[in-house]
Length: 239
Image 1 (spheres, helix red, strand yellow):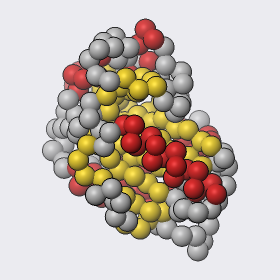
Image 2: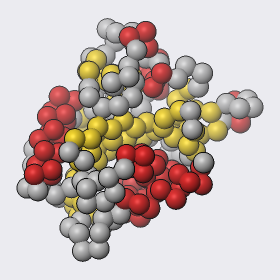
Image 3: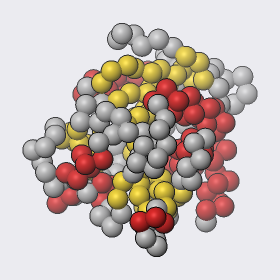
């Protein structure tokens, strides 16, 4: 099955001659409500043909989000951080400083209108990014996200280093992926991340990779272009 999913990774490239995907990085901490409002508007504009595709890289203040499959029992500490109900797929997740969130607003009509292929491509994007830092990320058929084996902790132990949750409207995607660079991992203890209690979470720094956010951003961009096509830097209109 893994081989079949790998074959799906290359199905999302834009057609030859298509406009590059805009690439936007916001400094500081972006309020979650602001991010959702921006994505909703941008996705609608892309569907209408009045805006280009966009990948938006942000960090958020500490917060929890609940996807459409979230179970109330998985919110262990409801008063610890703000909790946002969101229309993306998935369960509870944490966002906060030191975690790179990449919101991908892509028009699957221009690519391949297949959600399974899109999820496989997001996984490949993360795995190739991790590979740039000699971290082996792996898929799991029964669990969403990207995982890292931790043999130093014991046989069969693995931790999650990246999560994903998507929403699609009129075949335009929004929401996206989150990659743990150096967040406070104790903040994940207020939830059952993505409904998985048998495994932990990790980060680049937790794995001994002392990398900066700009270094991770460069790797994310290189890996994205391998899978989805060219990008073009744009300025943050809010800065």
